[in-house]
Length: 345
Image (cartoon, rainbow, N blue to C red):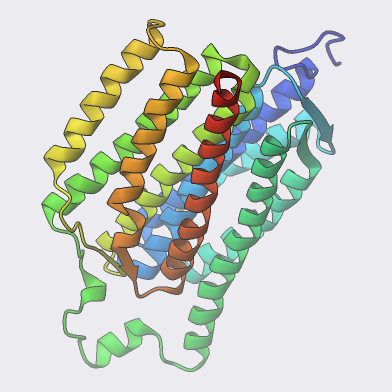
């Protein structure tokens, strides 16, 4: 029975529980895909797809977390019961145990994933968070669009493998006849120092997310805008991880240019000091945003995402999407900065 009161987000207590269960479902889906990635690690294309999808499920879970942190502007239209959500959580938990103990053939795992993604699409449609603020509405619309991309990518690999089976041209069959010579697609394209640079870039993106989260807490009148930037920074970190995985699978490459790990480490230290000053109330909102704009400009000048190249259609699609979303991200920051600065002009 629903609690007649409201949860801290302004929705009913039952609705809050439902959002938490939806987040749990996303995290279980993430775990399943990471399990698949480990199981089929000998297939670079499959390994990249599983890890990419797992990271996107993490992003979905993060979006539900953001919804739960809101204190205003949230309405929830539900078409799923708590009992149904609990059943799905139980089924996913059981499924993970089964594939861990008895791995499926890759084609069967892909077929299972297609069914799961179709169900998750229905779940998102049934449990659609509606926001009075457009920025959060856009976040959930992006999640719905991502669902379609998941299904399309998984179905594409499934079709490719089943077609290869019908024509007796599976890679494994070819290897039995004549071992293939080592190629760029069978080993990591990253040097250890390049891998360290990418790890530092991910840390920097997550630190930016923490800064925006703190700004949202300090200046609730602009919390919606800051929380949107939090989500975007977390997505950036996720995309770097996806591209890093693609490089490790041999289907993408990274050129660091003049970037060195010690310069990124120095920037991270400076940002950590900035966070402490922000936390202790030493900065006004305008001062903080002025520094943030400088941080973001520094990231843009490093052209991190432009330093990747890929042989896979999924990698190329990710890179095109990144170029577009980075421009939107920069525009959102500039608009917020101008809005905060305007009263002082």
